[in-house]
Image (cartoon, rainbow, N blue to C red):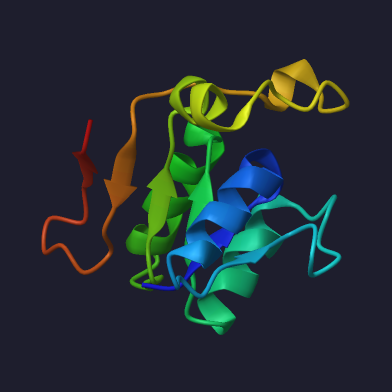
Length: 122
């Protein structure tokens, strides 16, 4: 699994921690993708065979369903719990729009799952 951190989850400490563990990870900030739409971010992840990591459960659950209903697939979407990640890496970036900060239970969206559903992984 090669993760890509979207704009909502692009915490420098998380990026460093993953790399220190030998994980090949990319981020919107590093690739100058800040401000890209959710659709553009998922498209980039698909083109580069990356699993998208985000806190944006609402939009990416919708996009996941749209991809499946179109008969397409993606490498995966991991929806993290921002509150847990913040406890590990520090407070949120106050420059981010509050409406873009979402909290949810951690979940993995697996397009290779025959049911095409979301699996909770607390």
